[in-house]
Length: 233
Length: 217
Image (cartoon, rainbow over all chains, first blue to last red; front, side, top):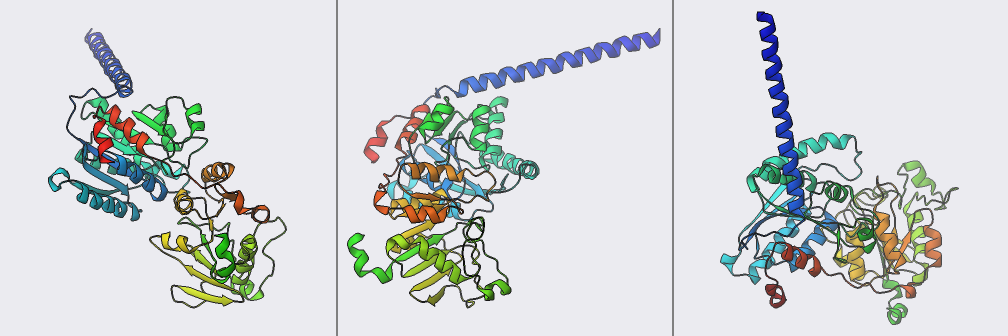
């Protein structure tokens, strides 16, 4: 008899556990769907004066494209600005410094919300195989998580390569968990003419980027949810 | 540029840049003392790809590349690893006199802009940075696509721009034909792009008012 009671109680508790798990997963899935749905709509914020912005600098050509965008962006609305570049890339942050210095002349000193410059481990180097990039990606994600907890940006501007993926994934989960709502903008590199880069494709397929911009009409045809914006360079 | 070509023939500079990632396809050099001394005289092997064993070969190769320009006076080489480094002196910037041509190389430079400005012809890897830096200056450009990189997306850009006649696109195997057939007069000046549409879309999405954009400009 005692044994039977025990069985029933364990069965009941395991049932509750199963139901709870299903419940949590359902809530989570609904939340993810809501976040994806909400992300595709313009931000109906109470028109904040400015938004903290994370700018992910790729390298070489990517950085040049990003700076071209920054030069025409209403930078006084995007502040404070946090620049992140790969730890192996010395040039990009230097260029960002030059850009920030050029703003000092334009804006009144108190208007400049200050800029911070940070480095991050890369998830994949050019030419690295996809298999070993799994391990390096995990390290990059841990580092990115630490940075993202510190920054909690409201806007993320990125244009590849892989450096931006961990940051965007974390930003997405911050949205799902309600830690911080952010808008992710991804500008596909001008070097991509016929198909999206791995980073671009991931953000497109997983619907993590609020807006994905492409610079060639061929890409717009292939990926209809992308926005064609013409060449940046 | 045409009226200058007569008087400045000697000063014509061909600038070769191979980027930060190793690019041995353009200069697939065999850096052993044996071959260096042996001076294997042809730059093309049986399957048609360029093989350069000495800096004489390199000069010869590039002389052919630059035939259209009516010869060149100086050849500037930017690369992370210069295969003939040991055969030259150990100082950083090298000048080697070799008949009519002067070969110079450097292994690191934070900016190639100044070198590009002096060039009459640029031979480049397919990186978007050096492509657009060259196009912005309106210099004739030959892009040699690196087939060694894992996913060879870089060729997309070079091919697209070659289709639009802004540059010439060559593969290491077919670079001879590309260069022999090319006519720089057929190139169309590249119109610079504009980031304003993206900036406007981002501002609109975030519901920032548009007005500021117009009077900042």
